[in-house]
Image (cartoon, rainbow, N blue to C red; front, side):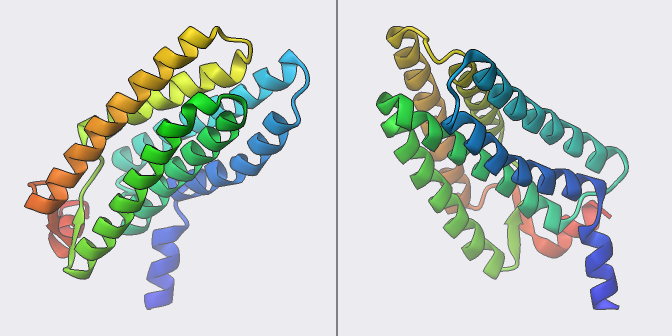
Length: 198
């Protein structure tokens, strides 16, 4: 029964879309790092846009058809974070000025992973992304896709993007830290969270 329920919980459309996003990552990396013409950068940007689109779609499907699951709450942000980190690392090769952004992103995600696991051990979990995290993610994705598609962008514009993304990421980091340390309202008992989504 446990295995059957686990499979039912895992093999949902939203979760399959999250797995699809993970599979797109090596495709993007190969195309971007081997790009030698504008069309290559456009294709790489297009892949990221598809990833972004499926991210929005899987959330809508999960909520509309009541396919929200604990596995999905882990798999969806995992796909987001791995995609974002891969994107930033690739861009750092071309734009070293983005190194501070990459470092902050890494520190923030490691903190959230550790804090999330510690919270989970207590039978609790964060019920969803914080608004600052959603804004930071959206702006980060869009701005970095722009950098991918326009590799000859003016250095001043690149610096502006770096500063804006870093500030939003820092605000999000602080918000998550405060939420975890103070056990904010979005951190609920696992049983309670699952009952609300049943």
